[in-house]
Structure formats: structure tokens, C-alpha cells
Length: 149
Image (cartoon, rainbow, N blue to C red):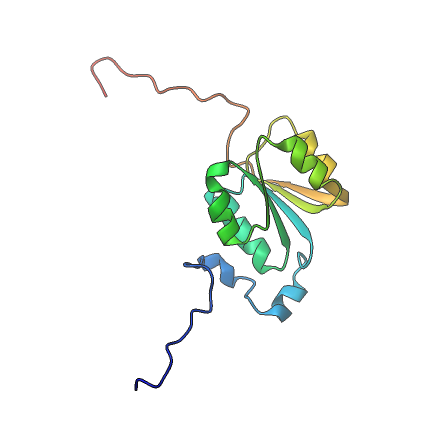
């Protein structure tokens, strides 16, 4: 029947992550979440683990703050990160987010215990260190074996 209008797209995102169903998108589920209306900072949000955490925090009703490399800014915003700074702009995000973060999830694994985290964290805030990279170790080129690849 030509008189029936086509269905409008209800989702602004072009894809969904399977993890987004853990908390659900219904408002009553979000309100029961311990992250509801909390400020969550995800450091290293451009990694696959970081993006999953952005999605989980957003679906739990959190305000999602992110720090990553600029190459990942667009996908982080698509996933629900409402605040973003480049990793190297720590002075800017320290000033903007001073004392507002309830939970910091560090996926980078900063071996120096970045003092910026403590500047943006609220009193009684929490830090979770996932450490999916080894920042304390320098990357070494693989050595070639004689006669081998």
C-alpha cells in the first residue's frame, strides 16, 4: 500500500554493540544502576575495551568523559562519550574536569600513577586500573633470525 509512510529510523547510531543490552536502554533499568548520573572518565577510550566501557557506562546512565588519541574521537562520540580530550592535553582536562569525576577507568595502565587522575577525581572517587597495555615497557622491534623471516 503506497499510502503507508516508510518507518523512520529510531536509532542515531548505525550499529549496536552486543554489550549494550547488559543494562538495557530502558530508563527504569538505568536508574537502578550504581553509575546512574555519575561522572565516569575512561582513559584510553579508543581501544576495543575502552569503547565497550563507554557503551556500558552510557547505557548505565553515566555522564561519560573520555581521554584518548584524536584518531578515535568520532567513534567515541558515536558510542556515547559526551566529553573528550586528547591524551596529551592533560592540563586542559585537569582544569575543565577538576573535582567532578566519580569513577576513573584506566585502560592504558599508566605506570607513573598519573597525578592528573587525582586532580579530576571527586573526594571518595574511585580508580579502576585495567592495564591492557604495558606503558612501563618499551616496545622492541622483533629480531630477525639468520636465514629466517
